Image 1 (cartoon, one colour):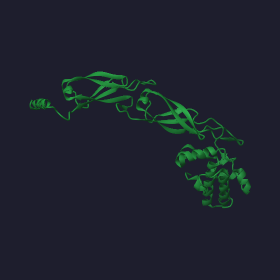
Image 2 (cartoon, rainbow, N blue to C red):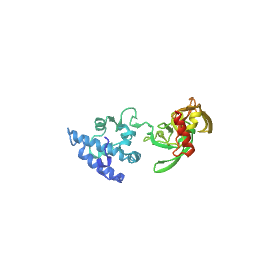
Image 3 (cartoon, one colour):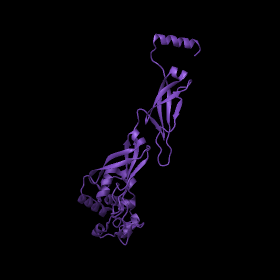
Image 4 (cartoon, rainbow, N blue to C red):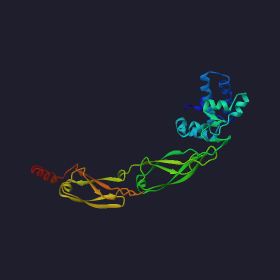
Length: 299
């Protein structure tokens, strides 16, 4: 039921614990199945308000609902998570209504909670907290060379500085796991993990394709015709290469092993110098005469 829980209970987002409980009691009395036998609409409404109460009455679930919104919250919390550690029996008994049997009938649970091994004899088994997913933007060269980044993670209302190791060769879309920095367990178990989805910034010199790098190299017209030696920037500094006579614009010259360094059993990538022929915007009088001669000679 991906609905606005505040609207379901008819309360403001700033409502306190007492207001949430009061709103739920009022609606639960109105829509409780014992008061509306055979009314499927009332039953669905009762399920909606009960789910809303289960989330908003729990400080940690409410915090995550407020932080991630409806869609994000339901990606992280299943219905079992929502009702875990929620006991509505006291409220139901105030009305003189059934508790456990009703909960089992409507939500598939027993003893105020879901089946599936979470509860035994009314006692809660600790469950692991939810994982959190964040995006982390890193510079192009740090993604290739590796390093360390510090992020400020807001947890429990406080910013917590966390150092993250960036492995060499990390790729865009890859997820880095930081153990124990996710959401806390709602039942006292171990917390979840923080997953950082990597986004890599552009570089003014290099472009990347997997473990290979490319860099454009401008060569004058005479150089591609007669051959030339040019400097190619690499991650380790410039390297001089030869351009063969007759090289065409767009040709790629491979520098083996000068791409992204190998890691985790993978070999290093290559660097490709992509040849671009320089065309001058202006010519001197002498250059123009020479080019006319070349043209007349059939070149």
